[in-house]
Image (cartoon, rainbow, N blue to C red; front, side):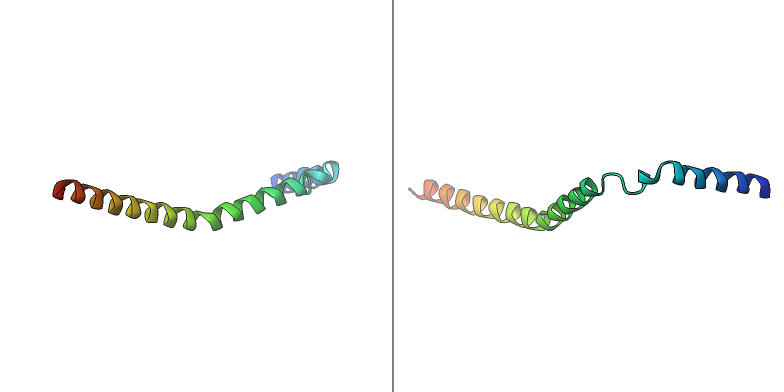
Length: 72
């Protein structure tokens, strides 16, 4: 058991030294992706609230129009 762990640790360490950019590759693209993710997460409640508000407004206008058609 100890031998397998030692071999695994050795392989992992050698990979980190052979491919040092694996942890930092594309930091700029990751940061851009995180910024867009935060933007969408912040905008979601406003989009949902606006959609509900627009639906209520449309329903109200439609009800008023139907009532005017029935009266007149």
